[in-house]
Length: 68
Image (tube, rainbow, N blue to C red):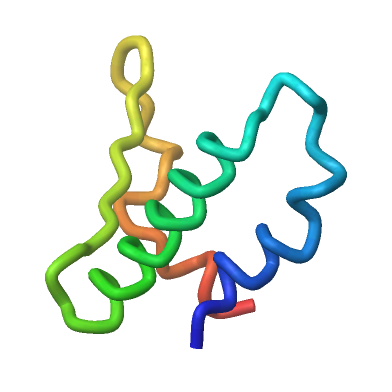
C-alpha cells in the first residue's frame, strides 16, 4: 500500500504551477521511500518537546494522544 503517494498523486495536478513535473516525481519517490522505510522498520519517528524554562505540566510521553 502506498497511501501517501496515492493521495499525493490524486491531487498533484491541483498544485500551483511553480511545482513542475520534476518536483512532483521527486516528491512521489520521497513519499514511497518513507512508506517503505516505515514498513520495513528502517525508519522511525521521534518527537522533542522544547519549552522555555521548566514546565512540569508537559507530558513526558505521547500516551495521552493514543488513549482517546
